[in-house]
Length: 467
Image (cartoon, rainbow, N blue to C red; front, side):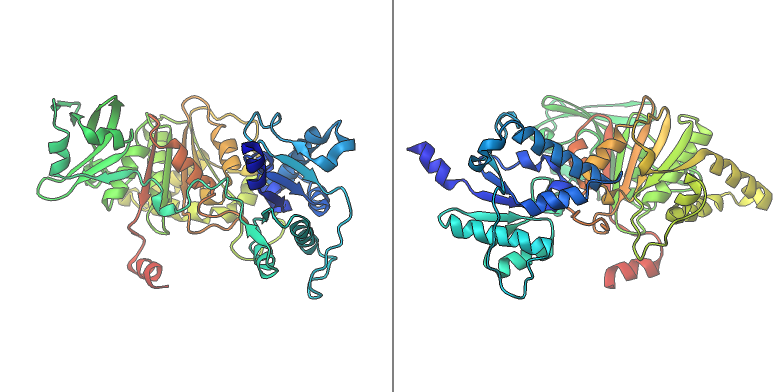
């Protein structure tokens, strides 16, 4: 009886092509519910399978998954194919393929020749055939969902790849503490000094809420900036930070202009932190701080041998067509931000004069390599400083491909602003940048800071506020 009841409750999800092209494993992400793949979805997968883009790769992978599922079951596809074995128990529903022609009556304003309308026709037909069951269209295309709802059909976005429903809940890498924090966690409090830094070992109820490399700050009469160095059970060790806002600690002539920038520089200059993510609006100093830190560690302390900078080539306006030249030359138009920041870093040494600055610029250029994402597969970077700019335009899969390039001694820094996503079908909740911030929090060798205060100019700050 209970099994029958469960069967009644299970929904039927109709998959739009863009869901499979966004995440081929979506076939196994609907738990106990059944899936229906219209013939038009298979047609569109077929027409999108050629090429070396992420979308083409995903289309091919989705087709492979479906072939594995239906192989040998061609004669009883009408009853659906169980997803349980292929998904290792994650999905217990069935996959149905469109095995017969469906001629659903849609309003005359929707011509049936269009692929989207054919899929809507399938949803309409299924709803009519199974009135007691919930039939839902799943699509990443907002217009498709609007059209479905105007026809009285249920439609949803694909939520499985969303890390967070609300990006306000995203980990920001820091926490404000007060005197009460010390009182609550002062059981067996130890403090000592070593190598010019202060250390505290605390025990108490707040330790469970801390993350390793989280930044703690206290304002008031005794301001403090520190980071969580380690957590062992119910005790944690906190280390005071180096003050990069002071000129004596300037990095390549750059000093921290606010608290968050000081936190960011402490993570960027720490060789024990292999992965750093910096989020922030335009003008908060993400690229400048990162370049200053990597130049200091590449040219001065020689921790890293080379700087590699890459970004997604998604244009904000119209595309400018094919570009001549080598890989580096083709990437230069996308690297305006790099050039602007290098100009700022080059002006910091006033005594060098024009010749000295020109020599420094040549030296910096020889150490910075600009690479395209398209040629990253199969590479391994040893002792490199890898900067991934505009990381909010990457999917979680692309982000994994890039970060797994890191070999021994390599540091990876992801920069981005999740409110400026230019890639179709990516949202703030499903961006690769949101994904890595959430997954890396609390790892011993990673750190994250959300920069909030713009330091570009009074004009830029005011524009960001009022426009």
